[in-house]
Length: 457
Ligand code: TYD
Ligand code: MG
Image (cartoon, rainbow, N blue to C red; front, side, top):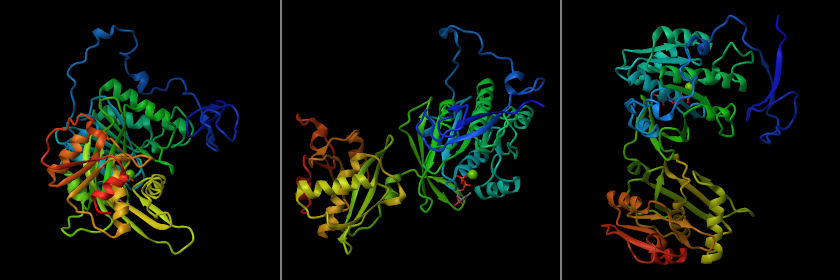
């Protein structure tokens, strides 16, 4: 028997060490180093690499490489097409990450069973055939050429792939796959890395797109080393609040398109439905005006979206006031409160403050600041802001309203949705007043207190 060879690998960055140590010197993480068994493949065994003639060995002139048409497969899902940069690229390896229960399996199974005219193989290491079939029936099974395989050993998976010759392969999930060239357990760094590399070789050599599902660790990283993200072509992240129905599909990395793209879905009883007009659902449709509510004209990726911000400012009953923010950075909320306290002279520091972004979305666009300030002050003063007003501006430490990107798109979206007024930074269109004509009234603001004066707050 061959001697068992082990190494100590960091589960975070993938660095290997000869001995165990508490801290990874490469990435600085603690307690991430785990012993793993590595064993080289025995002679006589073959895997995907060796069974294929290599075409990528010799150096070639870049000019002589045939590109063919930059062809994309239409996934039948406009949101997925969008985040992939215009459809599925043949030979691409796509990693989809997300918390458990967010809907990764649902989305990819939906892709597999709705993609008519393509032979799709859905490999599951997590669910039984029966479970998958039950779910497929619920989602509405349409593709006659959809195959499922419940297998975790990659050499067997590749055996069936060779037999079946699918056009698209889905692997749910990469953490359950096991390559026999390495002896450590499924889910360990070396296994994940090896299995991903095997699927990558397969994808590149046969020009078949492969989707990998990847689990996410507690702190939001795709389990396994960062190296995984380097191997694959595209990293998508499926996020959202499990208690809300909306889900966001974000591009983290894409070799075939922009990373600023974003797809929006709604989880329903029969699967994920595309949200075509995000603004309409993210605003409570009510005619009456409510205190503490303001509407932000944000950009999520390349898409303008109007989102409702709700704030509640109330008297604190305990010594230390409470601050709580859902869907927004709590530190940034504290900063905005400090600006109101110091630059506007509002005595808000002693109040309890709650902030909520509608729809369970998480907004990182700084342009939402102005709407947050407006909502906070509206609740503080108990004066409602018209639901026909929108806001887009970043608030700086001295209380100035800073310019935001793509302001024209934001204004146009607000105009399209029938808003009457939009407040933006004065600096967005420069000093020369080169603002294009809009039907909606555009109000430029330089300082936060100016905005409050405008709104009678
Ligand atoms: P799942 O896709 O298994 O999540 P993941 O693979 O990311 O772990 O399931 C997501 C959740 O969605 C599950 O808790 C049940 C719910 N769901 C629906 O609400 N409607 C549906 O049609 C399906 C299939 C699932
Ligand atoms: Mg799953």
